[in-house]
Image 1 (cartoon, one colour):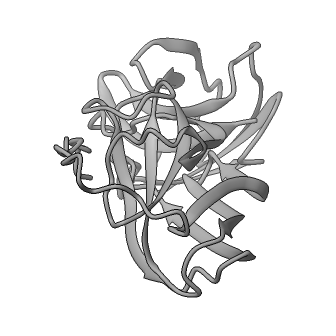
Image 2 (cartoon, rainbow, N blue to C red):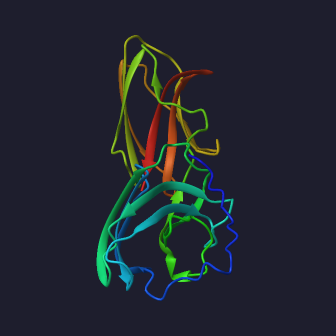
Length: 236
């Protein structure tokens, strides 16, 4: 994901915009969705070309910003050079993106769409060209934790995503003593810890979760200091 660096253009006084130049208005109508579990963004929106040429080239930039000012601290999600903005007519645009787990730092972002005539993705004097369509809470999962299971057992958890309870099922290939489980959040803080109280090869335990914030957690199955399995748990 490339950082967005704003280009500053010196505009000569002789470059006076013609009266009939396109003026692209955004934010008239839209449908926006953020699926936090899968990091999917989707946006369908309209813009309107007020006057101007029957067809023109323009730019669309999709930007993740922690505020509503486009600057060097923002992140470019996508950038499109398009054509065909018909004068005095609406146009519908679709945008979808699936963000990688380490695409952005952890933060709450505004999804900003910048649209401008002349292919200049920069700070604009036309404030209507910069529109916030919604916010999304992105959690960077690049914390070095991955799902894994040893060859000593099979692990299943249900339901996942969950809200209040979690059923953990272990099928052991051989008897293992002193098996415990813990639940850890993305910051590495342990929010739950307990033991399995049987030596059978098949173990099933229903766990009542404490009041947890929505998000991603990791269930660790251990014997002593050895990690036998790690499973990603989503709490809704």
